[in-house]
View (cartoon, rainbow, N blue to C red):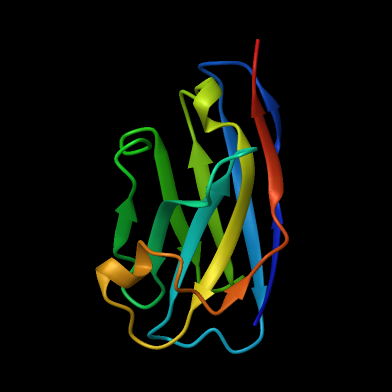
Length: 125
């Protein structure tokens, strides 16, 4: 599976950005897709995940209510709509693919097999 993330950029606090992850290869109906972020000097952290088959979604507490993850099976893409952005949302955002039938705790961890290259999101006035 190959992943290509796009859509990052500069946004003001309170603004919005939409990230898109294009996936190629054998995604697998029971797989999961996730978004993670890494700020300078900090560890990579979970942001949001979605189960590919049924579309169940999961969010980190820090983004719940502001971010929305979705997937499009026809185009093999996963999107992350980010609203009401805050400076602490700044970082490199990476999409990832988890094979098999991942349980929720796994989807919210770093235990993914495939990772995209990341796209920079900067929230600043």
